[in-house]
Amino acid sequence: MADITIKAAYGSVVEDEGFLFIGFAEGEEEDEGYVLFRQPLEGGPVWFEVNDEGFGAEDAVETVTPNPKGIEIALKRDLAAQFGWATSVAVRIGPGTEDADEALAALAAMLGPRWQA
Image (cartoon, rainbow, N blue to C red; front, side, top):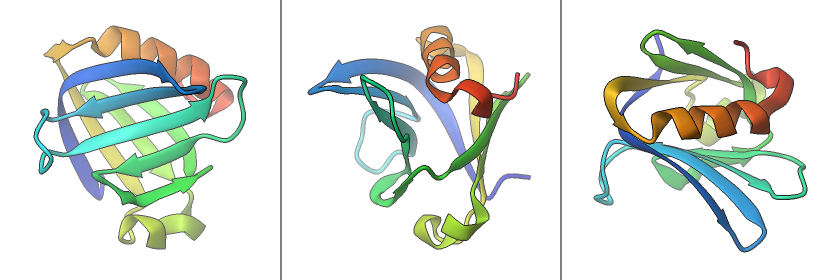
């Protein structure tokens, strides 16, 4: 069981100011949960955050594994303090999750071998 669970209402893929942003969010309000992956367009380390910029770190993702309920994100244990001691995040993606397929495809491309299909 994951330490943190996000029930995604939508996914997003955005290119802005030289970065690719891929996210899943419960909604659009500030207090609703989200996960965000960010990488320079030319490649490089991936920044990952959960629910707040303060709960994020560069190169924190060990693996992302898709499953029938969504994705499971395993975080590097030595960075657990950056995430309130969480080491795993589940993103629940249902059939009604807007733009989920586009976001999942972009995330698989971004993560390369860390995407454990």
